[in-house]
Image 1 (tube, rainbow, N blue to C red):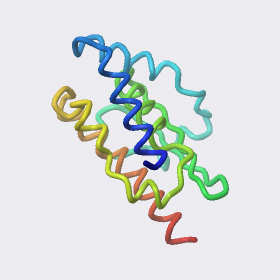
Image 2: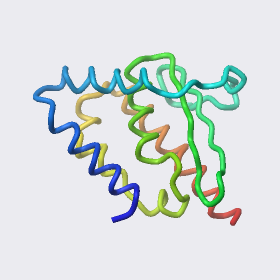
Image 3: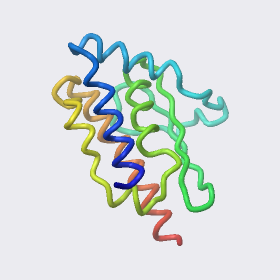
Length: 140
């Protein structure tokens, strides 16, 4: 099991502690409140994720053989989704990112419980992560 698969499994196990979706939403929002500070200088149009209803700024930094992602949103639930994505994908190897399916999205039933626009935003963020990983693999 690679690091991403392990992180996904841990998330799924965490969410099993919640009895209902209201508790899950609250947990997601709480995770979003714990995101690291995002530099104001990075809140520029070039770092915005297209396809999200709310504003999302996203950066990728290469650290040796890994990519460190950072993101923030102006919406609480989206910030929480970002926190989930960062736990799974940040500080991982690009090839591992590309070779691992985001199974946690369906396992947590996120797409069934998010609005269509939030689900589209989640897909846009996953796409951005994959694009940065692909570019890193091609550059290597």
